Length: 459
Image 1 (spheres, rainbow, N blue to C red):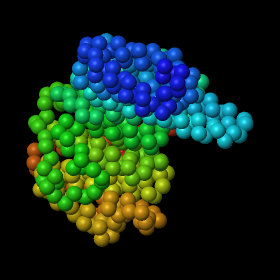
Image 2: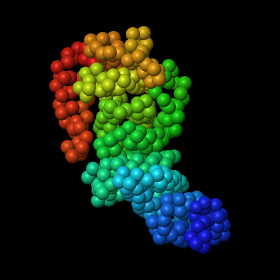
Image 3: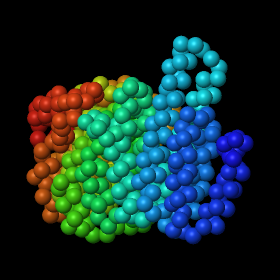
Image 4: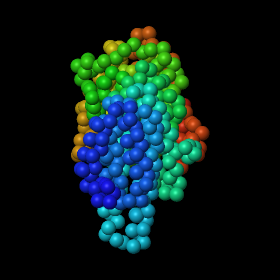
């Protein structure tokens, strides 16, 4: 009836019908209705985008009602069908775009935007459905969606975009990560290893998902959803020099043995992702804000004394990235990295509350505010900021110094020997396969430069 009378677009009547049906049957039979809608979506997969979007929106309404009761065995089927139709929609969209280059028709752009309506409806349905599942099922769905994301070395399970080219791969990556962001929202795992098991973490931190700034933003936001177990993120929004961190009333628990074990096993992966993410030329303010939040949440949720030392080594290495500039980053990026390091060390020093460390950080920030305000987030991320023409290595008053930090922490019982060892990111097999610039040369160059620095006043 809905097909013959073209009642999927607009779909108000269809939505009303299925709401009545869902509320009229017993909860244990809800999954039969959902299966019927999924089956019908498959049948109509070649219909216009607006018809498919209308069916998906009806599915969302049915799922919203069923989520309060039992959805039964259809959980995986719902996600599988929706992801399949996401792939079909991208195929149609890019197919239309290709044909439009051959015959410039006006209707193509409206078809493309209609396909985006389908894609947004799918993402919304996946997100709503996933976020209403119990945690054990949600964890499975997170793994399932992640397994479909096209990353290097996992094409056998992913929504293979090989015949769509780079643009198709990127579109699918972004949409699946947007779905994953919605599914992970509000997820609270008792331990980080439950939230970020290796089969999920490895592809999430893959260089394949660092290809542009939007992908990197989505990956960091997903990480925040899973790491932030005490809802501190809103207090850390933006990137700034926080005058008094105690005013934020940060909530935290003692670091558990399981979390310590997780950081021993996977900490280097997280550090590496942040380090490489800071070196990307297309970073915008939002990327720096999310990188700051990543460092701050890692400190709150996962940092024992050993991790604190690792995070300081990472921060100093990032400062070196900006000063040495082996990557030929634009001046905005170099100043952005310097500002990120300042904001983070200001936060970290107050969190661990070692007075001498706080004094060193405060002194550098005060000097910058007078002599080099572009190294502080409040200045560099303004709309109009005058950038320096060069960045001098010998202006040590403007830099956080390893020897000063080691001196301040050593007096408070920290094992500071590792501070003298420069942080160098792990090189993975994927780096050698990736289309991106290999970091192998970067790492060896960095080691050469740093080994030439004097240990007495090393930056």
